[in-house]
Image (cartoon, rainbow, N blue to C red; front, side, top):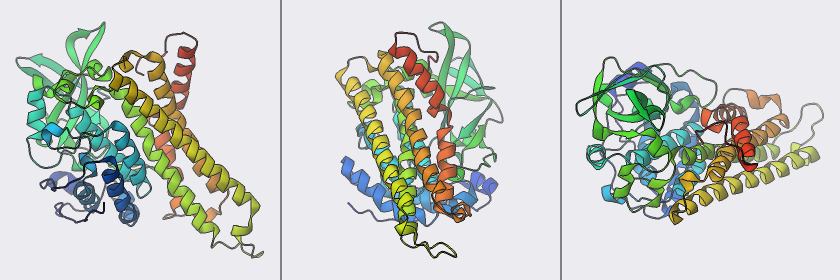
Length: 427
């Protein structure tokens, strides 16, 4: 169903990141009637041509333009993982994955931030009920990055909660966030033989966003770091034991009918993170096809559309993309089915290892697609503003994300397939 787009996000955010961070404001959530998977897919498709017009602006800003945030909010695509209890659609996890890949055809950076925001609505829905009421009852949208790398972070127990301090890197979407889930070990506590780690949720006024995202790929994700300038108190009900969430056993999930809140979090998120790669590769293929129809080589005046090697590259790219998308879709559906059936998806090491391998394999295959098409093009595709060159930078950045490690994922899966323990327990 078509959606009406508007630009109601506060425009007092300037192009200067420091001003953007200091002056962020939020509006109320739009009233929408998106209920089915197809509703959300169509909403994402409607955004694609609009997002394409702002890709260069997104790269320049090193965060999403305000208009992109408006369109994500007004389209309703960020509401699919909100629980029904709090007025959301509470759809299956694979719907989020597919909608993210659709958005990436228009703007990979916007797709990545949309995936981060949606997945953290999903994770916030696993807080203790009092915490869920606090977040979802706060009014307005829920825009939150989550940062698991708590190196340098400290959380010490006090009556009723924890005192949290430190800084975290890679806070995707942080310039427009109004909450943050931050990982930290709890001083003096052990859980299942290892230091107890928790995700602690704090509101925007308690953290500062640092201006430190200057990269070559996925420039517009605004993945700036988050810093606490002083210790802040985090109530117990605003925290989750990380291992419980990783195992799909966070107590707060019991308040929702949807099985998706019982998915092993890191396993599912790894597959979600691979999703934008599908859209990046699709955008590259479409751009390559368009250029084939118009490009003429200098001196020889040979038309690219008549070049047999270009036909071969295009055919292989389409086939590789179909394979990547089918593999990713089949794997997330397999994980969902096991979770829905209650057959122990969180404890099925082989399934989790497979998911971890697929999450690295799909971006690698998408990177091959884009690289092959760039190699079959002229040097002009590497000019600023060219889609193919940007796609190569974006897919390279995506493929080296720590959750999409190809070598680690495949090695783990191989070990598990012959009965060995995985070398990385965080699968």
